[in-house]
Image (tube, rainbow, N blue to C red; front, side, top):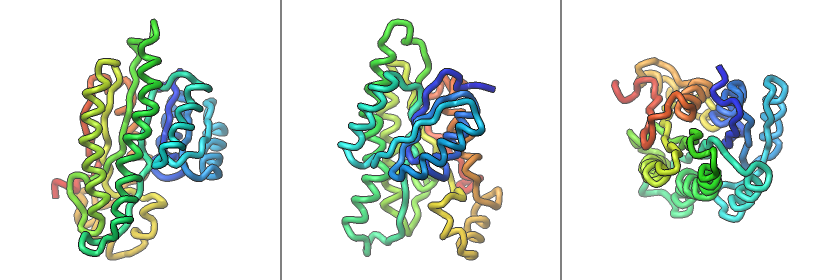
Length: 259
């Protein structure tokens, strides 16, 4: 099934984990992909694997999505090289442990910049390219989509990462604001909220047996997710199969909230 044939998909945080899995998934379904992240070598590895296993193009682009000047360079690159963008997936993010009472202000600001401000900066910059393309004659009916990766923590805040939880909850609200603003251009905006996923970012925590058993105990499906399972949901939300969906958040938590 080639749901993304003749599409260009840009994914932030594409060098590993959910971002890498999503890039490979949409490429398998016919998309050319722009891989965005801070570490070029990781992006180049993913690009080579995509080219090896699919017939699609993959373009690595190093960018710090929390830096407005870097995001401007990304916008200039996409505008100059492609002029259009079918799907934007804001996946870049990360967490750190701290209680509110002990949290340095710098750590709070860093988590907000990485998980929330980046979504605003990238969507603002690349959304303009999508809008301009949608205004072109013959393009106005083409389905375009933005998918923001939020988290289970937006729905059930974690005691040890309140800054991350706050930022991811704000991502869902920001998603709804963008969905309302961009609907007139036929650009859909939704979010996906994964539960615990086995990625390089969670690898150390999941090596802690008591932490892993706690996750399994609180999850109805008794396990963490694989990145590919989240990628499948993101691909659905980004595809025309979800053409009547905008302003929604899709929770993919293995049944955590029903326990």
